[in-house]
Length: 216
Picture 1 (cartoon, rainbow, N blue to C red):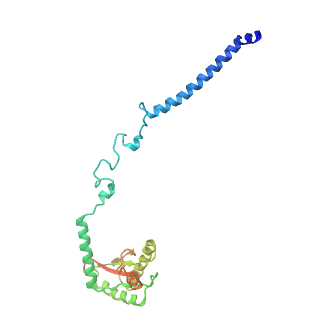
Picture 2: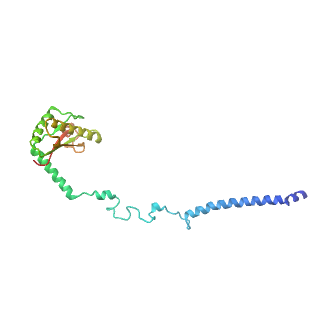
Picture 3: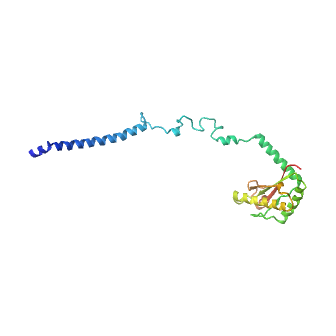
């Protein structure tokens, strides 16, 4: 018993106890620091601090919430792309004039077999007649539109329509039509002449359509 009391009273035992107490206090401070940081993140009131980039509190307003929906949300490009009534009317007038001129000229369209841009004998006869008219009317421009039926992808039919239009143009050039009077465009399957879903209708849509542009 006397020896145990001597050990407890020894200075090195007292120092060891002090070190152990300091270690416990240090752990408590570090834990409290984490808690303090978490509370700081939440704000003084303990509420979550909102994300300014999402709440519009960074000095501005969220796009689309401070303007009339008809003026915003659609984007500036859409505002610039609004239809011009005058332009639409002019385009309609031009289309009607082209249709009237093409009908008056009596030009014939060229029809193609399925998935083909080879000009048939009937197509060559139609183009021969068209060529004579174009050569006698040097002041006109002839637009050749390539069309397809609805089968196949849009991308594929745009290419096929272009091949059909170019085949008709090339044959007209062989017949002596100046290339400068001819232009080609492909509409693929996007502008069908007939909208029924059968072969009799498909055959009408596989064509090179002749459109007169300009006057005599």
